[in-house]
Amino acid sequence: MPSLSEAFRGHPVYLHHKHPDFNSLQKLPDSYAWTTQPDNHIHPNSTVPVIDFNHPNAPNLVRHACRTWGVFQLISHGVPISLFARMHKATLALFSLPLHQKLKAARSPDAVSGYGRARISSFFPKLMWSECFTIIDSPLQLFLHLWPQHYAIYCDIVMEYQAAMEKLAAKLMCLVLASLGISKEDIKWAGPRGEFDGACAALHLNSYPSCPDPDRAMGLAAHTDSTLLTILHQNNVNGLQVLKEGEGWVAVPPLPGGLVINVGDLLHILSNGLYPSVVHRVRVNRTRQRFSVAYLYGPPTNVEISPHVKLVGPTRPALYRSVTWNEYLGTKAKHFNKALSSVRLSEPINSSFDVNEDESNDLEVVQLDSP
Image 1 (cartoon, one colour):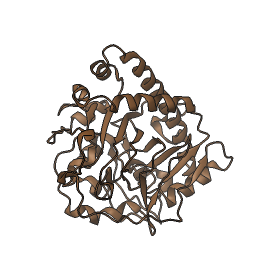
Image 2: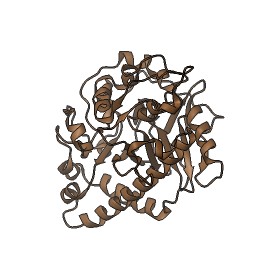
Image 3: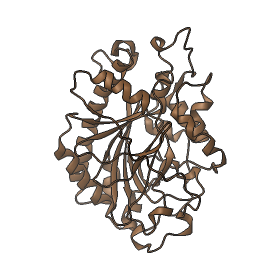
Image 4: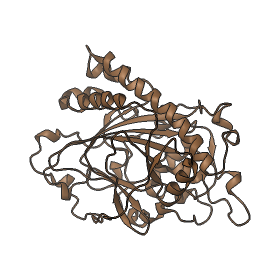
């Protein structure tokens, strides 16, 4: 079975833009100016559902949130607040390094981990006001380049965070499956105790520096994730927005101690279109820097994901063909927001993913550059 790094390496990427020093930019360069802005109207009265992990009715609450939103905020999840604080400290330390130091850990064209740009940046004619750092497996080699004397401190924090997210993701998968009427015994790769030991994941650290002209800039353009689930922790700066079908863009404000749980493309497929893969984006701030840490969670790279048999029947045929995450990463790299359409057997039902498909028709598709 290919590792997640090998799966990405099977779809090589080529960096074609220099990394800017955002702190030195007093004006928004034209290459970052989104002159044709997407809809900036934010629905004032909509709120992403907040779910208590320990609520006795949690499966039904998750089902409603995933069906109607494709996203929810999770509280009482068991991850210590102190760990978020330490992870924020490590993220701040990383992105506060001078550019020449960060570039020592820049990802090469045939690598996935390291410093670079957001995966989706190459699909748009304008650049995004953000930088990111991707870690798959151990951060040791990367952090040796960044902090030759103090790498162990930050390695310990990141590895503790990865372990906590891995444990939480397995519990979340059991909860989400239960919300669909599927037991862990129905998923072959779940393991005897529902620990999902073969799952793959990447940790994505994001920085959105303060921006001199935020109304014309974009931190992260509208997209969906290729994952089963994405578990996101954001600091106390607003910026994340999700697209709610029938309502438009809705802000997802930071919730102290909370985590944002996104439905990804593979869960959309597994649910046979019942749970939409949520379209989301990030706007930037004039005076405050925003950080977030995303745990991108998926199945073993060679496990085929398809509409589950319990969700297929005479009145609802399978809407998607089987696909491995390895294969789907290549599909996503080629088709971007049309990736789901490319593996679709028939028209999906109630899929908010499709809201953005027409919008992507005019996008310039070039190389992909990070997970």
